Length: 157
Image 1 (tube, rainbow, N blue to C red):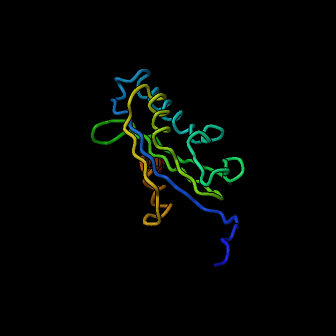
Image 2: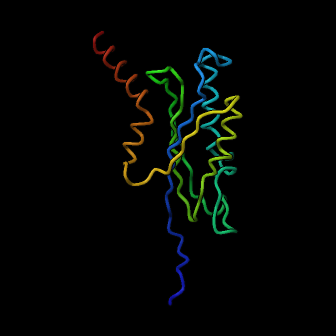
Image 3: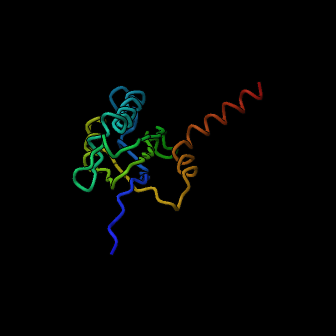
């Protein structure tokens, strides 16, 4: 049997994450602006240098500095139409030369701390079933609607 190739072909991993503090903006310290600011802090955790705490590599000996090409996060904070809860959708995309895992419990714990209490946390691997454009449209749906409404308003003026 021939030995395994040790080529360093780049791999891609993507996660779709939803974080919800489960609190109405009026009951949150600082109101909606304070809540949005703390969601931004959660998103910032997935940028360098903080992201290193949440990504684990296998096999042993692999490290962020040597095997991660780049990690990019995209997020949007929106207010739910039905119950009025402000929440965040986030897409984390990583290009790497190893096997990686995002530690959900450690990242959730950091978000709980940033948001000042237990939050709803849902994370899933974004596989090939949905295109990257579909995921981005889902994340930015609130901002796209606002942009379209603003564009309609400017056309009427």
